[in-house]
Image (cartoon, rainbow, N blue to C red; front, top):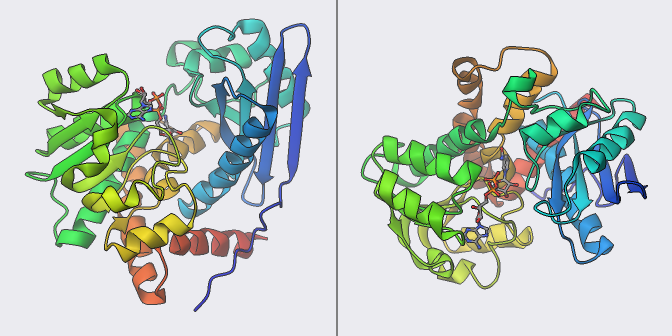
Length: 349
Ligand code: NAD
């Protein structure tokens, strides 16, 4: 059986270029699809070298959010925004409030959240201009940073790929390699450590790696060596595009499951992993825990860990379902995940 994408490559509901000369804001908001609900997606702030690169990133990320919501049963659409600039030097309240005004002008079609280069305090600043924002910090009355929930979901995805590859989902005694120890990666490392796993970790920011060694007994290796680690599961939790022509042949793991968005450089890399007998837990499914939490915040439902974690645990079953479907259809797990997501959207249209 062949799987055809239902959502064409260029089918976006709306793409808005935002310029505000007073604050210096240069941003792009992309709304990919709102069939399942208003489009939710984080605000990413990076010093993109060109506007074309910012556009490419926001389009790809917005599309990924549509699929993430669809496969995880979330009643939201997919969107994203990017601010062009260095978050350490160029971010200021006026710029964030200007973005908020552009978000407000979209009348609720797009809901902002935090992403790389922004945090829950920034969301509180954006809220001064628009109510269409999630992940506002707790002291300002919001649900706060969803990263730990994302990490809990990633740990569910890791257990699912372990189950598929070894017949057991126990983490005790397993060797997990973790790339990136930021908000998500460090919490993934902690969940795995607390469940008895042995860790090998890397981060380009050495203090975080040292912290993992000290607090979690992790073995630290140089960033580029992470692909060569012989382990049960490789968990990418840093940048996208790290599963590519150079890295796939180097991998010595039985499975991949991590938080990094757009981990595959191209869809065909999922096929390359399958050809090498490596089980891939699709990124947007495995890392959907934070979105599941944001949905509860957006719809004014309780967001405490106990309630949310019981919902996020579904990532375990859904990942196993995707792996079984891929086997049955003779396609990659990434294609099987796309198929399930598109089926839900087609049913709702
Ligand atoms: P973060 O910025 O807090 O952490 C990223 C970490 O990766 C940093 O510590 C950085 O130093 C490290 N890093 C960067 N390049 C590296 C490399 N080549 N090798 C090793 N380490 C490297 O970001 P985060 O919030 O933890 O998000 C991590 C990934 O998860 C991103 O791809 C993000 O889009 C995705 N994600 C995050 C969430 C969330 O709730 N925060 C939800 C879904 C997906």
